[in-house]
Length: 360
Image (spheres, one colour):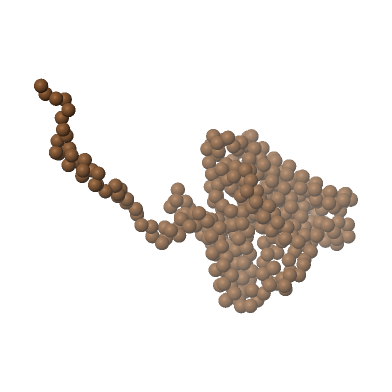
């Protein structure tokens, strides 16, 4: 009688023995990155790095070309004063560009609210502090209108804010009657409006309260963007609105809040503008919208949304200020100063495109 219990064959035993002794190492095929590819990845993870490198190189270059005049504390504080308005309005523009939008009306909102503050306080005798609050309310209303056009009527941000820029500028001329409120009248009746232009001495530098207010705004918005749920939702909405909706983010509310907040920041910029020039002019600062976009783009914020740093905008504004100041001290004509700024804008966008192609 045959048995069902058969012994394993020698071949099977040898196979098991070889399998047990076989190496468990898995081959890995890694492509070695070049230094340029590592640098590109670094710029992608730290968008603020590129504008910071440009700023440092510019400071070193102009300190060599111009000499001690450029690095004098008074001159450096003058650069900060010159970029204060661009910096404040750049905060508003950054918030909107982070959501993959753009606002061409920020300059018009700033000028309109400055006229409202000035006429309320000087012409109508309203308390200056209340006039400032009314101006901030008008800025919030202007941002709310932009938000409605974009979220409810589904008008592209570029077209919506291009139209509102014309509307707000026309309202500005109508309400102001194209008249400038003189500095003497403001200082006599509503000196609080000029408070942002007052200076304090700091180791040879002259800092304005407007510049300190700008730095405070940058810090508050930085905190909101990096340490609150609202800030994470802003980045998510700009990066991929459809994915943000699927994740439960109310993108329409986020966009509305961003445009309203941008209007409020523009109104604060109006207060800074009055302190900077001392008067209220319906023609002052109307092109700040372009300067704000320049600061944001040079600061490394992507025009496609969802990528960028609020402090990058501050560095971008400083880059523009340093180049204009350094070239002016070097005796370069204003024409070539603007030419240089244009080259910076084109270079910043080209670098952003190059980084996105390599890491998308």
